[in-house]
Length: 332
Ligand SMILES: NC(=O)c1ccc[n+]([C@@H]2O[C@H](COP(=O)([O-])OP(=O)(O)OC[C@H]3O[C@@H](n4cnc5c(N)ncnc54)[C@H](O)[C@@H]3O)[C@@H](O)[C@H]2O)c1
Image (cartoon, rainbow, N blue to C red; front, top):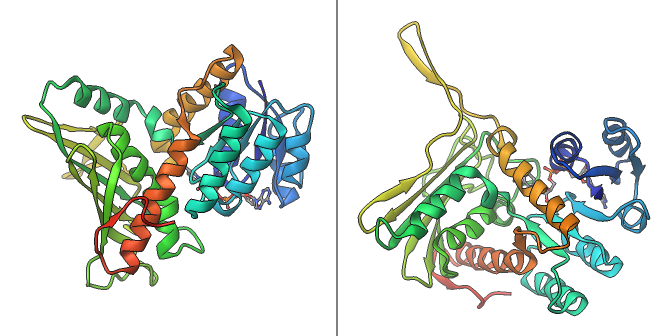
């Protein structure tokens, strides 16, 4: 499978190296970035790959069988539409869009193009491939601990990225949890509300980025999502599903505790790359293998991407309304 990657920033460069070094059946044949020096640097690390300064040139390139979109959020929908028009299988990083109308336009274009055939476009919700979350979902679905009643999903980071806004924290970061909670419960989110502490934070740079979302799902569960991007101490993702007779939590993967000088320490990852490296690799391997075998990849679909955008739009509306519950689907 000859892959072209649009956007060679942090995520695109990481995907390029993962596909090149760790995914069997994949060759990165081209990369594109509007910053052509960045594209050239990424291409230089992968012998034989081409560097473009234009996404459409990469999409049209005959040496590219499938496209991975890792450009900024605002470009995902239009670049996905261009891939659909070119008939090329596409893995688009999250989110699909910040606009429900735009996300639904992509879904309609996709449905028109493929009908009941194998989906062409998938969404990069890679936590669905993280071994911890996969096992958590399996244990919950087994029913051994009764019905799930609540999910508590926590996402903390060192700092928010440049240009982050209160809205982008929802559509760019919380969107992972907005996909994850209904996936874990196998029930769609019906209502969401947004709540933040009154107390100012010394680390948020004006952002209200430490907030809680309350999610009601169609199975009757009530879940919390905590987002705190400027938590400083490290990248810390936690998730617990509370069931009728047991609680199912993800234990920290692959850590060692070092005890010395009267202190016991465990390192906390700096960002998403070390924490989710295996999830990215497994997601990309499934995508490439399925494309090679001519079957539908078991990744999140473009409909899942649009659904997450609808939930995020409801959360943003609740934020603007001061925390009232907003029904998913009532906001465009
Ligand atoms: N799944 C995850 O866990 C995860 C993690 C991080 C980022 N992401 C997503 O990946 C995407 C990229 O994030 P990032 O952190 O790498 O950002 P980044 O800013 O580091 O990289 C984006 C790159 O896109 C390039 N670009 C801008 N306009 C372009 C255009 N018109 N055509 C081609 N390239 C263009 C920029 O020059 C830059 O190199 C975002 O949508 C983000 O949400 C997903």
